[in-house]
Image (cartoon, rainbow, N blue to C red; front, side, top):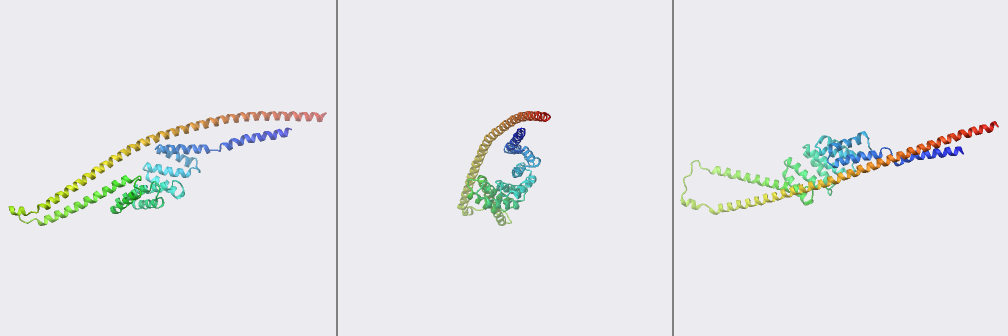
Length: 335
């Protein structure tokens, strides 16, 4: 009877010890909470604080579950802080180790932007080409084409840049960079037109200088004045008036586009404001959840302590009865 009670005691004790281990695995909730904190700081554009918390998760807690996320968000945070060298280190590590990640396409784009910021335009173009080739339907494809065109401009390959911008507008007419591409293409065309007119003016001026006689010309007679082709000058004046009209229309269109971009910027600010409020609410909800979980764990601890006290009482009672049983047995033997 006593042996059965002792066995029952150890079974109860084992269950009470095993249950909290099964329900609350060591460090799992803490690791998840650390990741959620770092991610929320990143989403609230608090990049320095986010870097600190992701670094703590990666290096101090030595996470395996969130290691991939840590490398990506650390690289992106440093990129957004303009720390190009550190950002490249994390992003290239991520690209090398996690080619099947859901963040891979964005990491590839960020690598291209980092090379662009380092003025390594040829290398950046290769990355942007790779992105468009591998992910033509994803959201950053038109961004890649746009920054490829800008890189070509810096390499003084403006004709190629114009072709890339036209391709962008054909493939992604409503993309992230479509308006910027139209503006950039218009500026390149105006610049080209201005250069052509300046060159033509130089040719005309050079030809006029050759025709200047060594002696000052005599005052023309009335017959010579009448012989001048008046229609030619009228035609030239009309041509200049048409050009002036076109330039005014172009300027008006650009002003309209600038106004549109300003409106879009204001709308974006309002949207980001609303999004930030939602994220703050989410953070508050997460904090409340952690408090509830903490209270539940505290209550569980109290219950477990109560159970342990109860077990201790049973153990002492069993030991007491065991001692009494031995004394009774000894008395019987003596009798």
